[in-house]
Structure formats: C-alpha cells, structure tokens
Length: 352
Length: 188
Image (cartoon, rainbow over all chains, first blue to last red; front, side, top):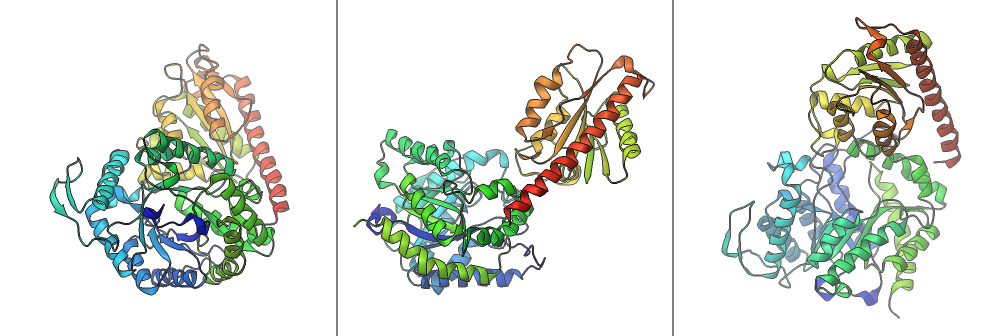
C-alpha cells in the first residue's frame, strides 16, 4: 500500500470528486458562467483541505454541460492552491490522450504539489471525446489497454522502449520531469460490472469502482472478482488499494437530503446521459443496504461504515456537486463532513 | 401526454396502412394526446455504434429523442424472415437499456400469412420487457387477406385496433396516476 501512498492504519480515506459538469440549476434554470464553475471547483478543493478531507479529484468529459475538459490544468491550479490534500483525475481518458503527455502533466502536478498527485485512468462513459480528439470509437477497448499499459510503463521505467499500434514507438525515451518520489499512484477506473474489475485485477493495479446506486452487495461481487483475478495472476490483493466513488449528500433528515439532491441528479442525468434517475430507485437509495450515500448524517455514517465492512476498501470518494448544485449547499456538506463524518469514520476504521 | 406510432419497417405498405388507421383511431378517441407518427421509411437512421443516443445527429437523433420523450409507443412491425425487421431492432439497439421504463408499449403485427403468429410473443415482447416497457398484453395481428389496396377491409381488425388504442391510452394514464401517487409519498 505504501507504493500508493496509503496507510491502512489511518482508516478509510475520504475524498471528493467532481466530473466538472456545468449544468443549469434545475430549480432556477440559471447556469453560472464556466469561469465561475472552474473557480468554485478550485475553491471547493481548498475548503476540502481545510476540512481535513484526504483527497480531491477532477474528471474530463468532452461534450456539452461540462467544463473541465482540460482537467490537468485545473488540477495544476488546485496543486498550487492547496498544501496537503491528495489530488487526482477522475478520470483521465487515457484512450484518447498521449500517455507521454499525460505523464509529463501529472509528474509536473506532482512536483508543484510536493508529491500529492495521482492518475485515475478510465475508458470514458461519454464517448464524444473520440470524435473530438480524432480517434475511432471502434478501437474503444484496445486504445485503453495499450495506452494504459504504456502509462504504467512510463511510471515504472525512467528510460522507455515501447511499441504499439496507436502511436509511434519510443526508443530510449526519457519522459520528464519525474515525479517527486520517482513514481505516482496510477489507478484503473471501472464501472460496476465484474468484467471490467477483473481486468484491473489481472493487471495488478489499484481500482476505482463507480458505485452510484443499488445494493452494496452487488458491488461486492466486482470487488471479490478483482481480488481473485489479481491473486490468480500473481499479485497480492493485500497490496492493492480499492476506492469506491458515488453520490453523497447529508442533511438533518434523510428526507431533507433526498429533497435537496433529487432534482439535481435527475435533471443532470437527463442532460448528460439521456435518462433521469427513476424516483423509485432513488427512494430505495435511502436504505442502509443501498450504496448511495444520501441521507441524514447518522444514516450516511452508518452506510459508509457498512460499506467499509463489506468491501474492505481503502478510500471512498463522494460526488456531491452533480447537476448544478449551488455552492452554498456544497459548503454545508463540507461542514458536516468536517464536524461529524470524518471523526466518526476515522474512529471506527483506523487500526487501534 | 406523448404517444408515438412507430412503423418499424423501411419497406412495404401494410404496417404503414395499419398505423394510419391507429392515428385515426386515436384522433376519434381523444384530443388530449400529442400524437407523432414515425415511419422508419421516411428517416435515414444510422446503425447503432454503441454511443449514447444523445450523441447522434440528424434523423437518428430525432427518432431516438422522440421515442425517449414518449409516454406510450404503438409499434407496428411486419414479420421478415420469421422475425422483426432489422430497422426496428436497430431502434432498440440505439436506445439505453432501460429506455422504456415508465412507458407503455403496444404492438400491431402485420404479415403475409399466419405462419409466424407467435413472433411477437416469442421475440418482440422479451426485448420490450427487458427494456422495462409496460407491454399491453393484447396485440393485433393482421394478415395479407385483411388488406385491400392500402385499406384494412376486415372490420374485426378495425375493432381490435380501436380496442388496442383505448387500452394503450387507459394503461398509460393509469400508470401515470399510480406513479404520481407513489411519488407524492416519497416527499422529494
């Protein structure tokens, strides 16, 4: 775990992530300017750090209703604006980028941040980026696998010799600058189903798994499959951290929390994925057994601890700004996280 | 509420003829419905390549968005090679997995003969159920002999279409009401 800068003795890490979505507030129909959204994301990272949150990450989506396409640039600004919080991408669509360039960017962010940068590489659930950056969607799988392998290789080796299908070979190439400690944590982002988790296990890389909604036990299959695949391929699952990522919002009561989030998630999903979030499913989300961390403060603490017991994961990252949520609501969440949630989950998950 | 009549084939006249009658039948029944006819013969819809339907352009975008915004869909389909036409299957492939959640879908099947009369039960309904549609259990099966020069000449078929249209709209309204009541209880 040290290789990935994780100390399991400290208990479950808690982070925030944003997709950098830029969606009108569904209650007012007003959309803040892109510049304000980007600045608020940077400010959110600062507030997260002040609250003692462990981690903050920003994703890239190349289509309408998003604003952090240049997510590594935003992360550079966050690196400069903060001092101790870990910072990462969530995720970097490595399939449509040059791994050399990505590594240069993130190694630089690591130096600016004094060793706090990580990369989470994913395959994209919104695929507009393929046309925009000049790639063929038919190569979706292979583009990711090849470029992800190269990214890992650059991280491990200072002098790289490599050839593949999608870019010119590298011969004795030096990819510079190097990160502060020689390498940085690189994770593989996976959706819910086990097939994708198994691929991360085979490669022996840490896994970020999206857990948006549904029974936590369903995601347990993927997590078990990941560890099993790692073990079968000669990796030690005890050395491979797992992080979950999903919706989060707390309020005085669970009903208030649902009222304060449903319109944003529903309208946001409609605009970005083409289908809203069915109310019936959202209502079930309040159940302790459902993975969605939206509810009263106590309920959400109980859920996070239940998930930790079930998954044995090392980090949970919360998405609470999706769908045009006003900044005031985000600040209130951060206060709850600082005063109630972090102390409770650290108390119960750290090794005594 | 939005109802879409979808003619699932790019060739032939029987399905289109049947759906033209569906339109008359809806208009006779009620004026509260926003009714749209999509005849796939009139649109240049590309094959699904796996992207989200929002990311298509032109006719493909129009057809998929119109279907996604419907409260009920009356699908008319011929039987080709003992199955649904590729044009109709492509529409299903273009849409998200749970595209028909909270939508009512009913079926009118046209065919040269009664040879494959179970096609709708065995092939089409499982797809619709998988995509979460509330499928109206009755459907109307129309054979070649029921048509003459682009008109339906069998009164039984006309009566059955009228009943199917009524059922579709009643069930659509009923489910909407049930959902409204249930959702009012959630309090969010």
